[in-house]
Structures are given as structure tokens and as C-alpha cells.
Image (tube, rainbow, N blue to C red; front, side, top):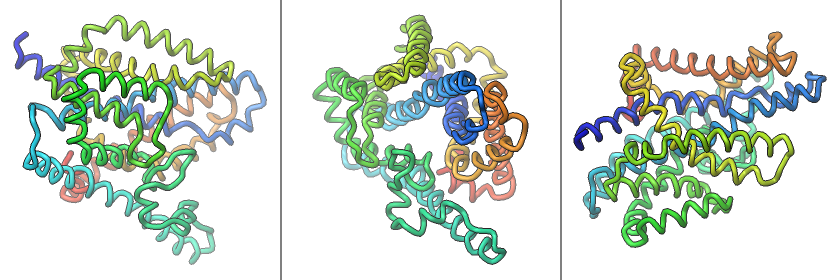
Length: 368
């Protein structure tokens, strides 16, 4: 293969990987509420359900967002061996459209929805949206940057913590450039060790996983390394070690081990290698590749819209069915909730694209 073929192959892999990754992100958030388990009398069954659902939600899902960061870091520095103020200014200007504007709009939407619903519900005596409490008791800055949610600091549109962190990485891009230039691979190794150790900054926008993942992508771009070509050398190792790590993680989870986090973080790295190789192996399947490529345009929209209301609504619908009555069917419910949510979000994307394409262009940062 010549260099052009290799570059084109990587570009195709990066396009088709995006939709499977967003499906994985939805699976992270689609798990039925823990309260549902109270109706499951069989404790062994509940334990098995938790193991199976966590295998997808927390374990397989651990590499989804880091993989997005790697691609973002790579394309930020792609074909650029040096940076100057002009380059930095151009890149920041582009990110205003692709990141900042949609980030602010989506968070503003999810600030306004509970306010509007509050006045509607009060008028009809129906109570109010639980998110109204957040809006009432937090500043605007907190709502768009760092509301405390399930032990994490996220914006009110929770999944957009990724966009928040990515904007911070973009601002720090000159630091990444000089860090990589002078530390070479040793700096990347240091970031990897820091990530695996479990240490973190606890500063919203500056998560260690963001530094490592964006930095890894930037490293490959600045060192002229084709990621797909590089990772293909470790295909067999990645597949085997991924399976082994998942088995180890399942055992540690069953034993409620305090060391499970270290292995999940290790799997998130190996999982990216395995996922890239899996997508690379699908390139020759033209129909599948074409479909995944067309679906990739909806990824940002699904990412932004799925969590706050759609997942909750779909989850509630399934909780009213027999699919929430035992551990075995509850797992089926989990899968169906997540897939239904993807379908609903994609359908909504198509509706907006059909009737308000200019609005969609703004909401998706030009990605549609």
C-alpha cells in the first residue's frame, strides 16, 4: 500500500468508528435505574444482572469517549509539523463554530426546558421537572460548566463534558505541541502512567483521561504516525488481552474488589486498539462501510440530545412492561432501552435535517 492508500484507509476507519462509539455511549447511559432492582427478589439474579450490565456500561463503555479524544487530538495537528499564532488563531476560530456555539446552545436548551415545564406543570397542578431544582440552585456558569452529578462535575447537558474538556485541550494545544516536541514518547508514557494510577486533577475541563487521549492523538499526528497502521501491528494482542481483561474485571466486580478501577483504565487503552482494528477489518465490507459512514453525520446530534430526557422517557416506558420484572429480562430491557434511544435520537435528527437544516447545522457544529 502506498502512503495515500494508508491515509485513506485511516480516514475511512475514523469515519465508520464514530457511530458504533456513540451507540456505546448511549449504552453507558441507558441502564435501567437502580431502583428497578428492588423488585427483583432473587439476589443471585440481581448480582448477575449487575455484572452483565456493568460489563457493557462501565467496562466496554470505558474506551468510547477516550477514542473520540484520540481522533480529535490527531486531526487538530494533522499534517502540521509546527504551530504559530496564525495556526492557533485559525484553529480556535474553527472550534468556536464546531464546539463552543453548539455547546452553549445545547446547555441553554436544557436550562430552558425545565423552566418552561415548571410553569406549564404549575399551571396544571402537575408538579415540576426535577432538573428545575438544578436551575434554581446553581449559577448560569455552573450549569454550563460544572454541576455536581453522580460524583462527577458536568454541564447540565451531561454528555457534553467531553466537549467542555475538548475545548480546554484545544486551548492548551501549544502546551501539547511543546510537551510532545521536547519529551517525545517519554511524555506520553508519563501521561499513561498518571492515567493508570487513578490520580486526577478534579478540575472541570482538565480530566487526566482528556490529557492522555488528546495527547496520544496529537503525538501521532505530530510524529507523522498513521494510527490505524500502527495499531494493526497489535491486533491479535489487543483482541486477546481485551477478552482477558474483561474476564479479570468481571471477577473483580463479583468480589467487589477495590482494584477494579485500575484494570478498567487499562482495558480502556487496550479497548481502543481492539476497536480500531475491528473497524479496520470491516473496511472491505462496502455496504456496511457506506451505512456507517452515512450514520456518522448524526453522531454529534445524538451525543448532545440523548441523555437528559430521551433516555429517561424510554427507560420509564420499559419499566412499565414485564421487561423490568426479573433479572434476565431486565438485561433485555437494558439493551432495548439503549437501542430504542438511538433510534429515537436518529429519527429526531432526520426530522430536524428535513425541516430545519440550518438549525441542525448550528446545533451540530456544521456536522450533518
